[in-house]
Amino acid sequence: MFETLPTPKLDGIIGLMQAFAADTRTDKIDLGVGVYRDAEGRTPVMRAVKQAEARILDTQDSKSYLSLAGDAAFLTEMETLLLGGAVPSARVAAVGTPGGTSAVRQICELIAKVRPGATVWVSAQTWPNHGPLIAAAGLTARPYRYLDAEAGALDRAGMMTDLAQAQAGEVVLLHGCCHNPTGVDLSAQDWAEVAALLERSGATPFVDMAYQGFGEGLDADAGGLRHLAARLPEVLIAASCSKNFGLYRDRVGIAMAVVPDAQRDAMAATLAGLNRQSFAFPPDHGGRVVSTILGDPMLRAVWLEELDGMRARVQENRRALANALREATGSDRMGAVAAQQGMFSILPLTEAQVTKLREDHGIYMLWDGRVNMAGMDPSRAGDVARAVAGVLRG
Ligand code: PMP
Image (cartoon, helix red, strand yellow):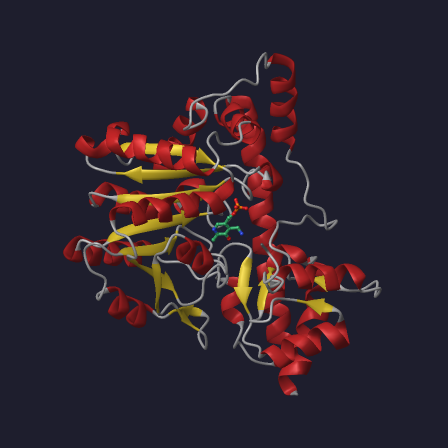
């Protein structure tokens, strides 16, 4: 039956990870990886997670099935974390999912249920899995302009012009914060402008929140989402706890829809039904860790302190790299790196220059110049900057 099955092309990120592991140079630097790394290059289990897990181990007396939506405490705590009371709970329907990836997929399936083949507007630069997830649900991705590559900032006019074409029945996918891969986020004023555009057109926003807490702080990072939710009748949300709780492999995510009260129960049942047909019950362990932390003031404080430290490290690395690049290139062309948010930025490099950095200097990044700011110790910023300046000179 599978005689003609072609071998799919290996995901470029996986290939890069393998090449880095096989590189024997001791001074190699991995800016390609998509996870947080501490100063020792580790992705640690967060302290609050360890403590919550110990508590769960002690007290959990059953692993029997729960509801299709997952643990109720997890859903409630996540609603507060994401929406901060911006809308009444009577307007919110949510289900747990295995990670943010499947939250995105479930929301796409939800859209396809009512609008098969619908257009989903996606920022021209985006997480490489958005396109495949949208296509897998039979929807049609359409790009909107986002990055002004020369300025390392938002192409505001381009974005607003493109989004003005979005119509009712179409969906606009926005990164809640810490845009992957550009690091370029919307200001409060930009969010208000997008909200006004969507209010006029009736197009539905879909916010992917994968890095809450890595930009300016937990509440500030959700400001745009909360503004949309408070102002518009419908908002779709996919969120991940992989980064901000360091629960990558435990697969913790949530798919949420903010709708008018009258549609809330139908929406909750539909989301539960979508879980049923894909994986039935969402994984419980990671979600329980999250609700244990968020529901306990002591654990929450421990978690926040560590999350604040992670954010501060990423910001420090950004400043160190921006300064080193200024020094090495004698120009401020990449100064925007310091002002961008979250783990990722795109350096203005060609694929050939990215290859040269890898082959000649052992510096690994994605082919489009995406770098992970957590992949580097500030003491190596000068090495990275000199190598980048070298390949830019040719
Ligand atoms: N959305 C975006 C924008 C992401 O960057 C990621 C993770 N890289 C995800 C969703 C999904 O994360 P996960 O499935 O690991 O929770």
